[in-house]
Figure (cartoon, rainbow, N blue to C red):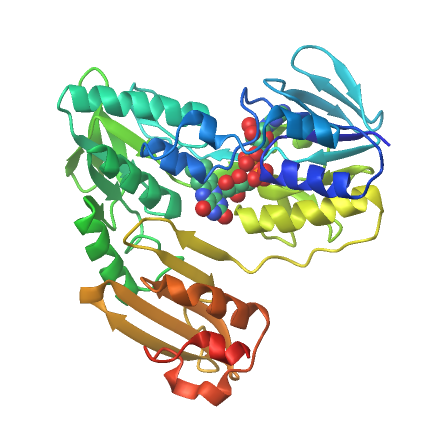
Length: 408
Ligand SMILES: Cc1cc2nc3c(=O)[nH]c(=O)nc-3n(C[C@H](O)[C@H](O)[C@H](O)COP(=O)(O)OP(=O)(O)OC[C@H]3O[C@@H](n4cnc5c(N)ncnc54)[C@H](O)[C@@H]3O)c2cc1C
């Protein structure tokens, strides 16, 4: 059996590891358009902030791939898929046959159509090469005493990038379209505590603003807002979400909506081709987070090896803002949708703490935990395992109460 994987992110490597664990004595061929071996994208933030060297990013040494029978073809894009002939074409002109194919080609940053986006000094962050380019531009800005930077987008990635740029010594403004940053992860009251913490770290947030154009003084010089204001910045980082890389599967005739449509076995609409990770759309949902990529890749690989052996039913979204001094984890529902739900809150702005639990019928169905990292593992398990916490009623957020007690 000949297993081929297009893409080399976490979905690809998780699938490859799952296939290897099946002990089939088969070879696995991975094709990636990037020139770098597998790395974890979240580590790019620490790399950008100067906390990791390039070599630290690579997860496995070359010997690991050899020992597992995995061959990774770097800087080799898949340009065509002929599903009827079970054949791929590569950008070097070669053709490759497969018995089972996994599409794990991920997603790319969405670039808003702003005037001036093509200028020097405007970036998105997805790859090692992006991070290298941002770092060297930041160093040039600092050397020229141009300290202002702008991040467009106040999502998780935008705030983590903003904090990394502040760590390098830049004064960062985050432009946020919605009423507060991270509005999918935190409610309005919690956002007040979060913005205060970010301000202490050198990150200023401007909410309810719409960028209109990138200003220029030969390179990027700032952002013109629709309300007439101008925000200065010689480094502009756009973090406005991602779009799945669907060109290849679409051209091959696979069913595609926002992502490649997959069933609960992660099968696409054509035989012997599976999809997982940011490129896949299951039941109308696109998660575009690592836990979903891992869950989906395991199911896809199990079925590539042994059809019908595993099923996927979605992923409970759980996200963490990795900013030292402002760590926030959000799980499941962050707002009670109707009166059938009940909310518990505890806020201590001076200590940088905001906690909220959303409960339904005595079960926790969602949580916001800001500055309460020690509670995250137990609360995550209580949600995942559907534990009945009604015996602990309203003191679940008391300082003296350890949520792990409810697990016993
Ligand atoms: C800086 C950063 C930080 C993040 N932090 C978090 C986090 O903390 N938590 C979290 O859950 N998620 C995080 N994410 C999102 C997470 O990284 C993605 O959900 C995850 O990488 C998706 O994995 P994937 O394998 O599906 O796709 P990707 O990681 O996008 O990998 C796909 C690979 O396929 C390659 N490729 C594309 N087209 C082709 C082609 N035609 N031929 C060959 N190769 C191709 C791409 O270049 C890429 O290398 C972060 C993302 C970024 C950019």
